[in-house]
Length: 187
Ligand code: AMP
Image (cartoon, rainbow, N blue to C red; front, side):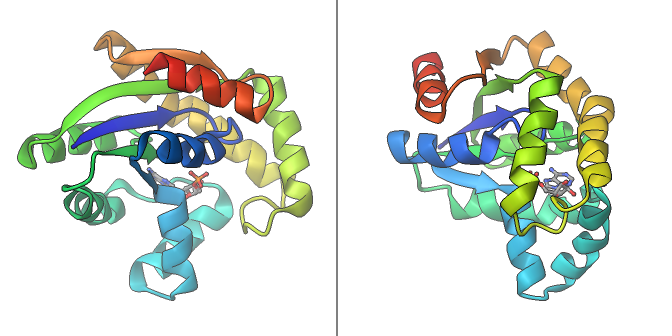
């Protein structure tokens, strides 16, 4: 089992591309955002704790996610691999992932960085906000905050993997199929 990290800003298309790629290569798509939203809908303790942060556009504290990530790795151990979408988002999470991968004998194969310019992120955010039922897609101020938090807290994770020579940068501009083809060609 191996891990491919799908990395990018909010509205860069990670969720859409993660689903497509998982179908094409037979990996499990593991989106921390999707898992947290499901936890919230099921009114679990994690879901309720996470909701406050998600609603404000903040990151959920690292320690709330540790157990969840380990659980996903164990669950997928007998599969070909995982496409990890939305994790790690902090350097601390990158360290946790590294330790867990070592502990469970799993390789972190590559980081696929979906590169979308800031103005395009804003435009996509506005577009998605029109028909999204996500609690963090309603208010433009919260959507901007998510992009700002990405730039402050998550971008350093991108740099961390670039320095480790693990990153492939893929342009996220263009239609969905076009980007999907580019991603496939990069792995
Ligand atoms: P996403 O669906 O990836 O855009 O995630 C939606 C929200 O879930 C984020 O804005 C965060 O509040 C929370 N979230 C998802 N993944 C993480 C993570 N790795 N670390 C912290 N918070 C996260």
